[in-house]
Length: 337
Image (tube, rainbow, N blue to C red):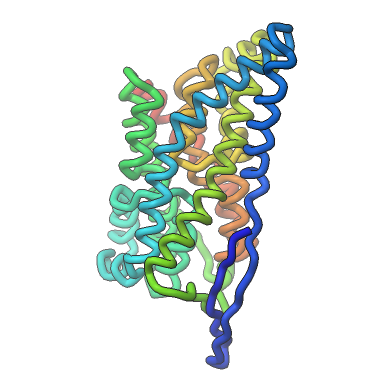
């Protein structure tokens, strides 16, 4: 159990300190249980057919987890450093005031902020609360977890010998961020967005904020990595090859299946490339759709956006982003892959 303290400021100006016990992520506990189960079952099952299946599953799972963890740790550390040491006013001052210029500038600024999608939502909320146009804040929210250096290097490591995947991910994700920003500036309505009625500030100095944020984010996003690696390993071992090949042989079906899988698995953007690389039966464009959709719309992001901007906004934004993410991935995949 971890202890978390925060100072809550009520509308009247009164402050109070809140202390809460934060349990370990259920998916983190699942990781511990899975590793213990594998360790216990492998000697018992030996070389039986079931034992061979578990051995193959554990090999695939471990390889993905070990490859992805260093990038996850690096991304979490940088994201926590930004949360602790970089004021939101910095981004507000750096962005142009006109939405027509602010949207592409905010999308491009995502290159400079390594971090996962979990951290991009509160940053976008903070920018919006400080007067940055929501269209620019949304463009930044979509681009930052998808085109930053940590994610691009992780993608290059996961797809050695295929630099087109790195360029494809960068291009399609930046295109999605800018298009969604302009779409909101054109069609978005203020009454779709809920503004917060109170502010919550982290109690303690900046180093305490850094440690607390990094610990929380690693346990949270690490758990989703566990689920994603386990799902990919299960698909490779349990689902018959004939079914996998049948789905993969249909271009549009493979794109749609991996796009939906990205939404459900909710893997951190620093680690999702290793899961995509393991799905070798699927064409590169379908795996590109997995990489573009995941950091833009998944189950945990919908929950975070609902909390930050309201449920009505989250549902409209997620559904539109999902469709446009697939379109951008297919267009870029057709051009590059």
